[in-house]
Length: 222
Length: 251
Image 1: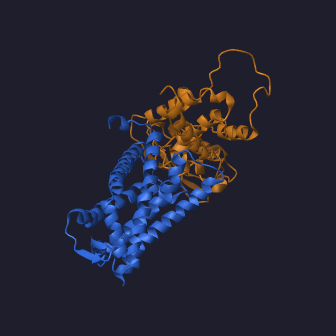
Image 2 (image 1 turned 135 degrees about the vertical axis):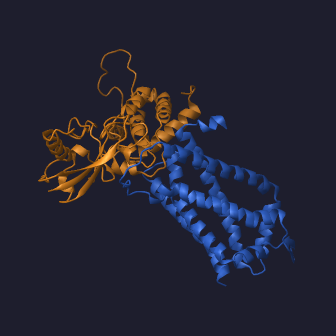
Image 3 (image 1 turned 90 degrees about the vertical axis):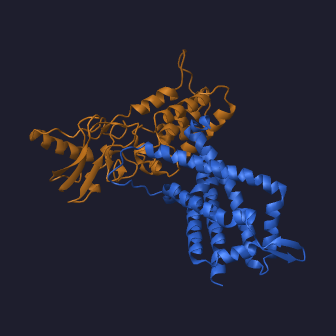
């Protein structure tokens, strides 16, 4: 740990970008499974998928890799931000004017909200699913914990839906800058591919945000 | 035009500074920004007051001495231009102009609007050169260089080391400056020989001096008077990563 704090600025950014890009794979898998809940009134497909994720040994191992990815991304994010603040001890009177990359200025802010969301989200679903009591439901394919019902129940709570939507919107802003920025940090800046990467990054952040937000909204208003 | 100037005054690095308001009258739209400050200083001297200290040298936009953070922008409102080349036609009669020094921990204020930018020199001393031992001048065209590389190296070498990138960056990061200096050598065969050592030494020095990290906001590129591209930062990241992975020595 001691040495990792003294890594050079570029090494820290490279580690952060690799961890960040890796976390997107988690978001996509998570979104894919979540969306199942909307297309099945009995939640059979969702509960089956959730059961698979909770029991498959490969996924369970990968869960720890994912957890480490989160920790690395967050810790380096905080270290980098603290260094950045200390690099300008006397602030400007007139706020800096810069026309480019609006969301990049708020990565720590959007990141902090997403982190708080993550903790609440963890307490609401992950801990309940892992350690709490969840009613069981029996389908033709077998008996599973009815996590789908837990999700729907939670998404009937107004303030939680509101918080969820806001947090996911901010995650979208975080991704909009983060995805393309990660490639630049890794040294990938190409006259042909960079515009494509930027477009894919924007598209992905919109898809991820809308996909996640659609679920509580549909449940709450139906 | 008549203007109100809100200028940072600080007698030395040891004392606290504050903003002082000044009025200037009958400024021509054709005057450069520094000429406007000269007029202010002449009036201050005539009144027996201490003139405002600011850096300037060539006044042709090539030396990198002038600085000034004007109304929230390094080198003021025009694009791709230094303060000395920026003219008063960019301002309106009756306007208040806020003039601040570059703000960054590695750029301490010496006096008023002058900052000590020797940290940039230290970064150059760490590796921003090609070691030349002996020998005569090589024949022209004895080392073939692709035209594109020559162009990119020249674009990077256009950096005048004024520090506007650091001043503009919300993190006071020097990545655009350092990457321009790394790139101008990394793109040419003469610079490749020491490329791995150079990038590691220069980045280590940059970090040691207390510049911030790059968050790819690209305010540096937007404010750079020489319009140095942030693609140089990506090139430096690549150079650094490969040097760390391949190089036999760590610096």
